[in-house]
Image (cartoon, rainbow, N blue to C red):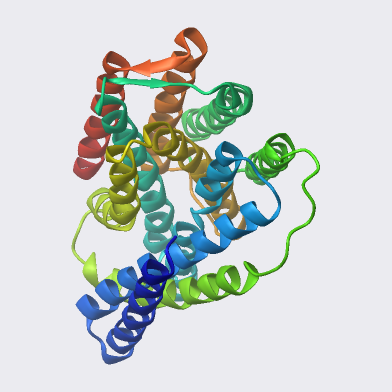
Length: 341
């Protein structure tokens, strides 16, 4: 990232954080949400810059570095969702806890729709690099299997016991272990031979960006409760999820338009997988998360979408325009249905 562009994002983050905190303490829902969102966008890019510098310092090849950055770039969503969810726990409001997780999974579903658009750009094909086949396919299969187990568990518990079960700790820990193994695999497979340990010039950007994200997420979460007052849970989750993922989606579409379609496309796949393996798993471990109709529905949709992606990559080595249309239709229709429930 150019120095001037990074400075602009840093300024955006600081200004957004100031506006968000002012709105949160002054009781202005609009200022808290808008300022917090701008703070998350600005400090999110600073955090990503720190990750990119760390990948470069430790000699990761371009594809592995891209996967690592996109997998860990879900940190803003994790921090925002945890801030909203912990506020719900503190206030005794279970709907805020559910809303936190639901909004994150809406973001993941929207990422799949953007993936379909990226495939349609250019010649309507997204070829799979050899590194992607070796790294992504086993992970996608593991994600689909693990999420399907959680969905089946919730359905069986509801059918036979007539209760809304909590997400089982064992399942969430399994997802988190998958993610850690995946990151280690990417780093080991993607490192240039003979690359040494780099410096720590990336650390201030990464730590400073994460610190700003925590504060911006807290400011935004203060305004979320007032913004969604009177809305249905599905519609509220859809609104917050789309607002949160819009900057990331725009950046990936711009990258695809500039000729970096493979990087954008597989970055979106990595981010979607990381949402389930890292964000959902951490939230389910830290928060009392019910597996009700909203959560189970979105988990099932994401599993179906990721299964379609991995099947297309495994069978043809690419995503074509027909598969892209199916992915877009699945994602958009599921999001629209969510707003009605």
